[in-house]
Amino acid sequence: MPARFLQMSDVAEELSVSMSQVYHMVRSGELPAIKVGGRGQWRIERARLEEYIDRKYSETADWVRENPLAVKDEEADGSDEPDEPKPTKKPK
Image (cartoon, rainbow, N blue to C red):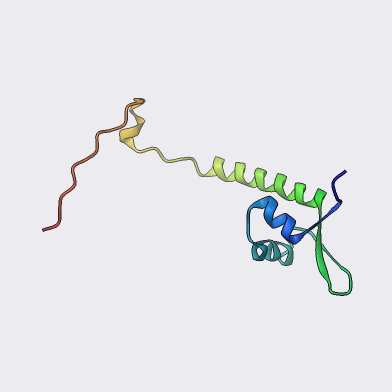
């Protein structure tokens, strides 16, 4: 059975981000955490991390819907063939 609480370093590794990014997410309230022990070490409950990840998937899906990928007119012809490279002018 996995541990209920994760250290910030565990969260950083799981999300492939830096410790400072995790600290910012915790301090900003974006990622709920608790302070434990006399030295006030941060712990993130695994369930809260999973909720955070689910929320980010939802936010990303919303963003993708609101910001569709722009397709250049040249690429909109439906062809699978790449366009030939355009000649470039060399500076004089």
